[in-house]
Length: 492
Ligand code: NAD
Image 1 (tube, rainbow, N blue to C red):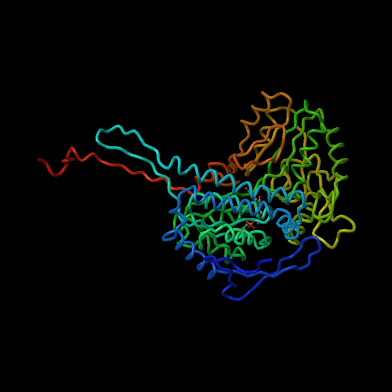
Image 2: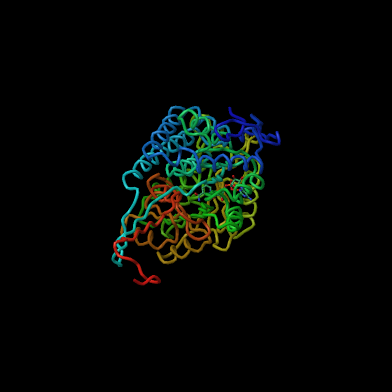
């Protein structure tokens, strides 16, 4: 297991010599110690990235050459899938099948952006018709420069891939700052990059804490673009910091995503998507189905089945066969989620399932699948992101009421609707004020499709061609046909 920082193609200690603990959330035991990078290490990483961008081969290569290296990175991640997934389970707690899924998606993300890097060669510039004779113009895409990437702990390697792969595909150099809570698989990008032949300095990885390493990356004048995924308060701070030197930013923030279930769907089908939507990845998902609106006609039966099935969910260590809910990422997250549940118990809502630490699992950061029914839209638990296995459910009478309640949120990351009437489903999908809409499902995410939020859920879109465009500047090059003198000042 790696324990150093990856700067300019070399593995180095933090300049302070400090390290910090890596903790397994299934038993709260320290299993490793890694370098605690600070502002000085970020400065060194940005200097390396700047040199790689301003003078190095990476941005000057053709897209096809970059694609070959990105593909090798994807192949290497794929080849080490099982090992990397097990490392993710140890660091984050998620069940192994979900970790395998993450690593497959991580490899897929590198392969996808390798294809897009190649396409940049095929269509590098666009001719622009002009209304004035004698001039011709074209738009040219160029890498934006040095990209800083700050990521959260819920999908540690995958969130890194969503930023590193498109940034490298575009020809940018990158400084990645993983979450201090889960840094292990992010460091593996360095090993993979070295093996794939990525030029020194094109990717740099600094493990460390948000207020020092993260903050320095956000404020560093050598960084041209900052891509952030995390909470709204940190996103707000990053936006303020980046405003100092008008840094380009993308923000992928939190959510409180609704799922509207109409009376014409099979109840078990809806129950399945709600369970998946809120208990997958322990509910530590930005787009988690945390608010459920169910048509009044099926509400009692739906609640009965939801609670019945939630009680059957197997909780335990992520490597145990059949486990569907692992420990939350750390003690602090467990404390936050349990406090949110306690608050919910005092509100206008009825706790009908879970609500505590599962018996026999007190040694880890576990929380039971928890369901609140009849939740009033005024409740704190209905409005705020809990980021754990806690779902709030209430009924609705009409389509208009469902849409109004769904949209009544400061967040707008995702929303979902289930109905057999596809016209109605489409109408509701279009009425939602959110960036990602699922019809008759909830959560499946595809590298080809745009990802990002409305309102306080963020700014910009990742994934697909949108993800690549985040790391490209558009330059206008306009030429004049000198056969005719311009003659504004110098008359003949
Ligand atoms: P967080 O905001 O606490 O931390 C995210 C990252 O920011 C970490 O790397 C942290 O070290 C860094 N950071 C903290 N303070 C900083 C500062 N002052 N300057 C620069 N960097 C700083 O979030 P988290 O707890 O790691 O993640 C959970 C949050 O992320 C949830 O709100 C969740 O919804 C959101 N999230 C959103 C998406 C999305 O795609 N929209 C995806 C995953 C997670």
